[in-house]
Image (cartoon, rainbow, N blue to C red; front, side):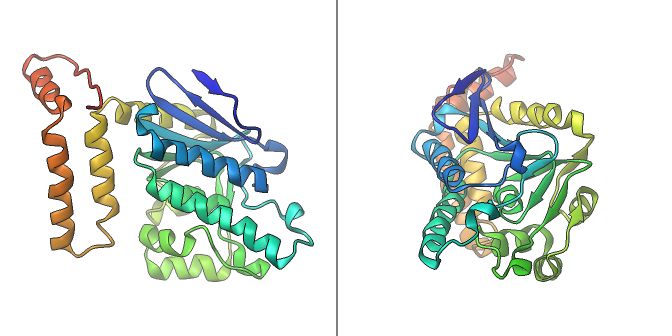
Length: 266
């Protein structure tokens, strides 16, 4: 697996299976985000918008086994002026948009505490696997602010408006099992098994036709934003993009020839 050395606070590794692993790498601070980490996460996700063929699936996790990400580093924020805070948050907003615009699937492997902006990063992913010991919270209202990395948009879509209001307005933590029961977490596994489980599903996604996966993701992302008729019209436009690909012919040929398809993403 090739590591990309351009970053200091995160790690990016891309394997021959075209699965990319992004690791938030400040374990001594439970992977809390400094301004530098915010910029690096933004830049990392933006590169896949520019060139989606680098990877076929992404996984984001935290370094160590105690923290996925605990949001913004509050030590760095102490004494921060209003203007500096606003500028820092503009970078956070760019992370949210870069994740929303990322054409390839993103899986969150939540290996520990996912609080505040850390939970919002997990919610911005396409789905979430969590370790049994993971804990979640959106604590912003207890700190004089509110969620600002799409939390008030993505959490209601994951758990429903009433549950989201309870989570956000109390700021109270909840468990991985709670997250599973509420539909926010797809699967809960013992901590040592987390990355193995996530990489297995990531590799399965990466083995499918890349254009098909990207078009299907894009269409599903519109499902809760559009009326059903408009959503279906969008789906058909996305579908037609797959018909003209070599991969569409390869998929049918491989099925009929009883072999594994070799997809090229074109």
